[in-house]
Length: 213
Image (cartoon, rainbow, N blue to C red; front, top):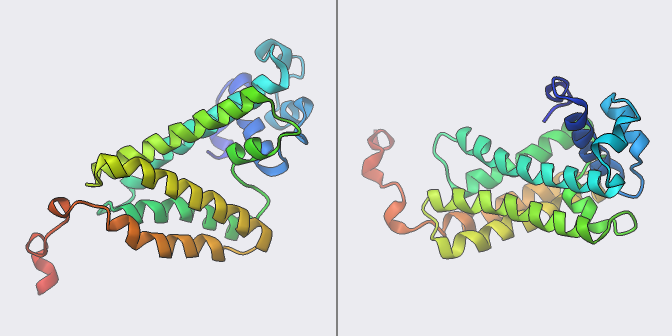
């Protein structure tokens, strides 16, 4: 979600969004409550009002927001595909990051991953929030895969594989300052993902007569 899209929301929503943006760039430990208020253009005194649990509550809500946002993005990616396929969905998930990195650089990563790794600034409830966020995201992907003909017993495992590959590639891309790893996982995993679609749900050649002209 772009910052401009958030401007119409109230101070609380803006602070949650701003926390996610700062965490993805600087990590949990380096993200201060005052920094969040400034980024959100919110009154500093509103922090205690909206987040009586302090920084941990704010971080947890930012992590939860990220998981829900990632889940909603799955539906957007599917809508952008003329013929949805597992490889096409994963390609869109990867493209979100290659587009960002090629446009503005490699400063940002995934807020959920940052909250998971940055133990210096994250407590046990934050780990639980991160786990729930990944579950929300994974669930959206698994449902999308099932809708494309992947058996339910494989959809969950493939969703985990897709997220794990993407998060790892994001980390390597930021270290290398290059999108090579992202493009590699999209290219190499694509055939495996498509091979999981049940035969009886795959388009037949006769369903596309124009291809034979």
